[in-house]
Length: 210
Image (tube, rainbow, N blue to C red; front, top):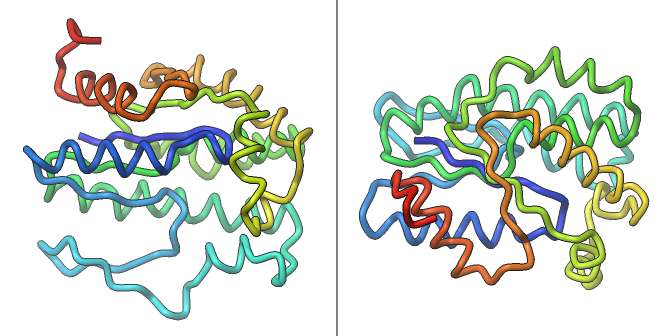
């Protein structure tokens, strides 16, 4: 089963991703990955990633010093998401009970269209038909809270774009999450243990506990 967690930078998704994976790992075989890490290779039957030194794409896309423009950055991030869903996540899914993923293709749509609505066409072309998640959890956290959590970070090229951009991203997340049938909305103001309890109940099919 593939579980993905998404939302605006600073929403708590990475913390929740790790916490859910840790909880599930007590009873199941669990793999944890990120939608936008640089490509890796897997040997047949192995879950051990082998980095490809010449393909440090995420690092280039998000490093402010590399000076990607917004369109170049989105092209690179869409490539990473497409490959992750087409190649790497299905490989891990065949070897584990759960694959827990930090981010989803909802990020492609929301972050790209917040730059320019015309980029939604890029998202449709690149990732519109590849999403593998059985369940996407959108963590809806007020942008003020997200910005406060990020204030002490050095910040990558996206995190430096400012409040107005993240307000647009959050609005788009809401639109795309509502339209995607596999999406469940979580209140990002809840404490992590309560969110973990809810997510695990959904993942295990204990709908009466939600």
